[in-house]
Every structure is written in structure tokens, then in C-alpha cells.
Image (cartoon, rainbow, N blue to C red; front, side, top):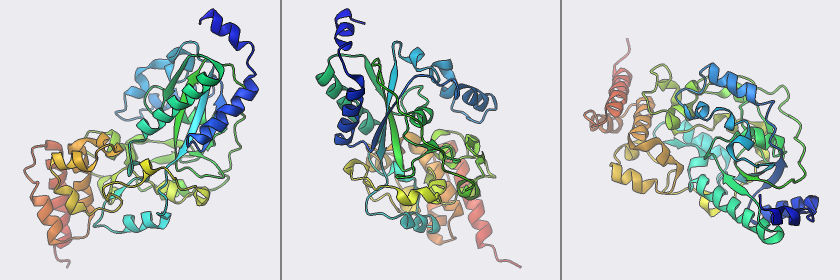
Length: 367
């Protein structure tokens, strides 16, 4: 660290600076800012146990970086504090009941609410950079680096420690005044700012999120087996979806929100005013047969700048094929599937064959 910078920092009122940082965060569109230290000793054993039990599935990157995920100072040497930020994303003007309506309509595709707008990684990192520049303009140069689901960072644990919420039984961060419909981001800094206190866990005896999970992926309070999670199966995994889980996926073609939709605390969720997170391209209820007719070029155009790109074209078509297998029987559904029976992708072909077999059983007369 530059000696002049260090000398200048001894004159800074860090408590006052922390308050200004939170005010600047609000001006930049963050719903809440919290500050914590780098001590994640309580969380490291949990992560290691999660990995040793293989509950991360094929997400090898979770184990690839050793302890840098749970020891921030190893990832970015010199880090003293983490400024944790929260940004709401539930679309304004679209009630939660609309999500249930789409889930109940087997002819339409359900896409998790977080993925309907612009890719949040870019939005969050851009805002965090602006926050860092604002701090520099006020207090001089310092070392910083922004993150948003983009590096080995234990985001939920840091958010919990920074007072942004508690980790609910569904493993998502919850705030009594805002629910769980928000993105998380972090700014690693070398500033000795005062830290915030964690919030009380208010889940109580409620188990609605555990009970509603379509694939029983929440195996206990704050315990998720990603290998059964619809979000993992339709986004992170590039393999075939296990046949036993396909009927349970319903029409969820990218992610799943059920555990959030039933959470009582989400009645306090604040709709976002961020235009970047507003639904794009009419994908908040698109028809499955229309999505399945997309060419790769149409997929890229229809999901430009959106998180859905993460699944890839073949992965997304795999997901839609499963949803079509689960859809009510119709000539349109069968025709859409047959049109892709010889798809160039073996992954897509396998799921089309399964879906067609399911549709044929639905068509067969019962005794």
C-alpha cells in the first residue's frame, strides 16, 4: 500500500464514511448496503461438508478455488472489509399471483423472475464500480474490487454477516421488510470501516419453502441438494435431466421460484423500479411451442443481454422439450416435438424422444 495513502487514511472518520457509503448506495439504486469483516470461519466447514457430500453436482468451480471463497483476504490480498449490496428485482406491476397463473398453464413457459430482465451481473458490477469511484472522490484512492456472482465469493454468508438479511430455510437471504427477491453484490475494500450486525433469523417454525419444492431439493433447513434443484437442472447442468425428475419440473424452463412464491416474508417484497429488470421480449409467459420453434439465431436474439443465455441453446431446448412432455396433450405439442425428433443435438433428441413417449401415453385411451 502506498505510504502517502496510508498516511492520509489516518485522518478519515471511518464511521462517518460508512454512513456516507450507505447514502451513496441508495442514490445509486441499491436497496440496502451493509459492511462486514472477512471472517467466514463459521461458514467454511458448512461449504466443505456441502462439497464433500457432492451436493454441488457438476458445479466443480465451487471447489476449484480452495479456501479463497471462504477467506476473502486470500482472493484479494489486503482486503479488510466487504461492502455488501442488495438490489431488488421483482418486476413492478406483476403480482406474485401472475407467476402462479403461468405455472398453472401447462402450455406456457415459466422463467424464474430473476432472469426476465437484463443480466444482473452487469448491472450490479457497474453500480458497485460507481460506488467505489464515489468513495475515491470523497476520501482518496484505495484498493477495491467489485463482484456479483462472478468469482469465488461466499455471497449469502457475507450478506448475512453484513446485516442484509438472514439465510432462510430455502438457503436464500431474507429480510423482514423486503423478502428475498433481490440480487447480491460485493465490493472488497482495504478500508477499516465499522461493521454492521447480523439480523435475527425470523423463519421460526415455518416450512412452506421445504414443503413446496417440486423435486424435494431442500433436504432440511438451509440444506439444498443442487442435484435435485430445478434451477440447477435447467441452468447450471449441461447434462441430461434425470428421467425421474422430468415430470416434476412441469413447465419451468429456466429456474424455479416456488420456494420464494410461498414465503410469507415475500408479501413485504418491494417491486423494483429498475428498467433493466423489467421483463423483456414477452418471455414472462411465452408459449412453449413458440419457444421450441426458435432457431439458434432466434434464441440469441430473443435472449440478448439476459441471464437465459447461460443455459445455452441446446440446454434451453432440452428444458422446453421436458416442459412440452409435461404439457397437456395436443396436436400442436406433438407436432412441435416431432419437428425436432432429428435435432442435431443428442441432448435435445434424447429429451424430445422422452417427451413424445409421454405425450403418446397421454393420448392412449384408458381401459
